[in-house]
Amino acid sequence: MRHGNTVNKLSRTASHRAALLSNMASSLILHKRIKTTVAKAKALRKYVEPLITKAKADNTNNRRVVFSYLQNKDSVKELFGTVADKIAARPGGYTRILKLGNRLGDNAEMAVIELVDFNELMLAESKGAKKAAKGRTRRAGSKKKAETTAAADTAPEETSTHE
Image (cartoon, rainbow, N blue to C red):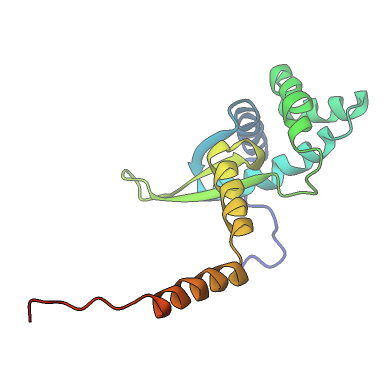
């Protein structure tokens, strides 16, 4: 039983797990989206979200703390630059996990983990849905429907001659 065990050890030693999560977090920050197993994606989310929160306040101490986790200057620069600018207003939930199905070789559950504010397709869909919902109201639709039915009632009926 796993009572109270909050960390998924991923069948690795502590040092191997730390290196794995550090590399995956760097890849996620640099590429904005990576494909991995569901278990690794869930472990990565718990690892990277506090780092992204630290990136909101750009000071020397936060940069050193994040560098101690990531060990990659390029990913730290990217995190405190473009990523921090985009997520500044977001109060949390910086990552999204999308399940893909099972891998052919070993039937492992696969997923894509991505940074939420960097998926242009989903951002475009959500803006389009807001515009569509904003443009139509029930009252406007029923008013138009009432006008067309009233016009149809007042129009003279055509009789067919081919009976």
